[in-house]
Image (cartoon, rainbow, N blue to C red; front, top):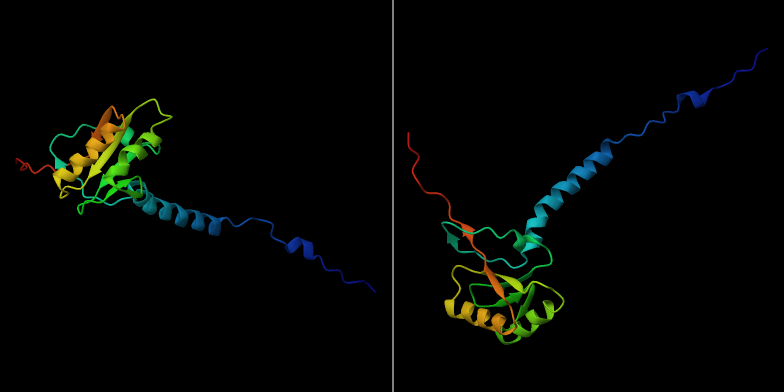
Length: 146
């Protein structure tokens, strides 16, 4: 009489299924691609449109000092709302350990010119050498010749 033995170890599949992991990674990639532009600007302003803007690649860096002025006159340093009187001191504090005394300003196209000038004067009193005024490229409206 023979004994019946079962060989269950031969049926085990030891391959790793990476499809669920790839699906999760692609979803995370899409989420980060959508959220990243929203996080970078911090304060939502409608920049003025110009015909021939000068490119300022340094404005996109994380460690740049960014001042934003909204259309209703609120002033932001980064994502923190400040008053125009406090702006100069806070900018000076941020630029204290930097060699370049340059800031970038994002003013809404419909903000009051006087409010923007007050912010520029306050920043200049803090010892800022250069101020970059950011704008968007105006869309090309030239007719297509056939």
